[in-house]
Image (cartoon, rainbow, N blue to C red; front, top):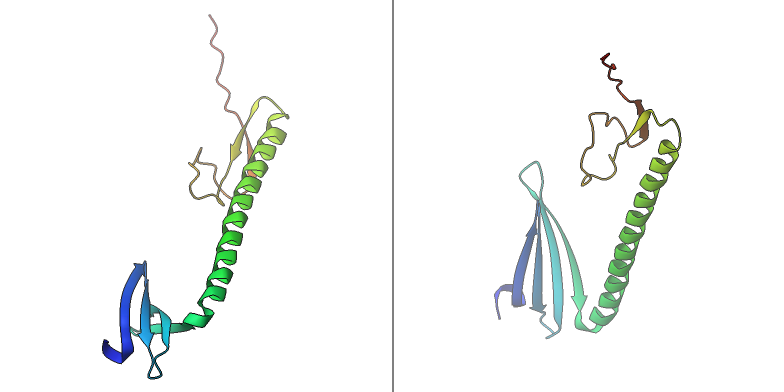
Length: 138
């Protein structure tokens, strides 16, 4: 047995946070999972939060975690479909108007979308007049 009853320990670092997953045993012989989140603060100190889960509670904890992750996944998919639908509807509304205008859609809410033009001011639909080129007389 390791320091302070540690049986197993591993860590995961994500950006500015570190998560420790420690399996420990207390003086009574009970085995539990200790999850610690550590985040470095501006003052060079660490902000630490811990969760302790005993083996008897693990099944219920994992069920709740699974439900939360499932909801998060469905919610993200739903929001992506809604955003795609809004962009499609906005394009249809804008293109059914004056054919001499071009549609510029700003996707500020979608950081992965490529920028189409320099007219990205907000997350709203912008209709900008198309530049006219003078006809040459031949």
